[in-house]
Image (cartoon, rainbow, N blue to C red; front, side, top):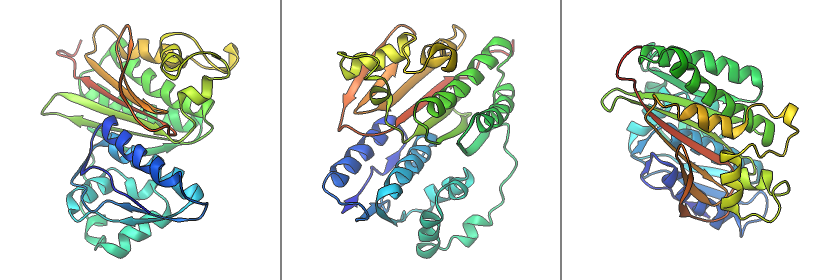
Length: 291
């Protein structure tokens, strides 16, 4: 059975499409069945693309025999290597790229120190990992002119999203940050392959629809954890992200829907197949000054 994503993996909509195709295929398969992920048409990928791809691959490899057909265009592969994809993915996936492409020249390319421009993909499994990631993100934010409350708010956003994954899903999360100087914005991606927001909270918020549960998770203090154990939660994440000084676009895909989060609402944008995981994509404009 074959799964073929869009030729661009650059948005939560593209991730939702890949999830739809993944669920359509896996719904008919027995454990250990062979699945082919066909990336031959892939031409462009961003942080939400490669972190989302890592989460989906990790989900698939738990149950199935995953085979990958690598991209015909080596440009996305070079970018994936620059962003640490092959250090974080499984040995199985890496070996398939090695077998199908001449990867030696890609691995040996000069990797200039760009720690103030990007954060290569990190896999977080505990709170200590999240703290280490937080330190890396701080360097990028400061380089882009974030100071004081604005800097700490975005740091808190990443920290709390990561901590929420660890608290609620007990699965790793993948985090990456990339600066886009031409558009004067940063893209921050946080993804996991857990049960999703609805599945995590449906027993706590009985009688609500999927959209109502997701909205409650982000707009209120709803949680399946005891208050003393739950950290700051998604409500605090949203409040930190939408600090008045920040120009923000926050999209997420969870369960079967793409949502856009604003300061006052959570809007359902597109429905898909019921699926796993939660995939956050934050785009935030650089501050106009360094104050």
